[in-house]
Image (cartoon, rainbow, N blue to C red; front, side, top):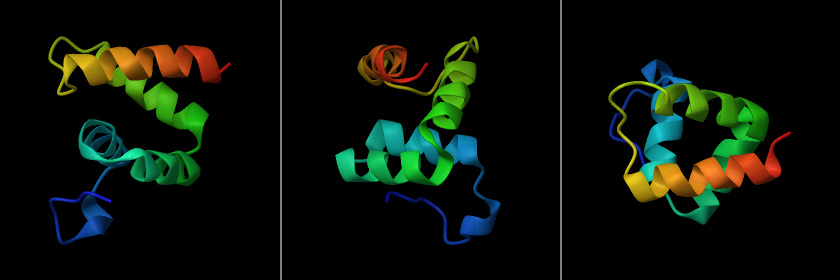
Length: 73
């Protein structure tokens, strides 16, 4: 996984999810979905993209909006 810190204990779930969705590969995405659960990941993602300022690349935000809409009920 992609990490920009040496102390993982202080990395929030929100920061980890954002980093993995933006910069990780498909294996990283699968791992974080296992760690968080896809429903929790979707909830965090939707909360993040509702903010006025988001850190997701527009293509990534669009892709995962569609992905979660299709696969999370």
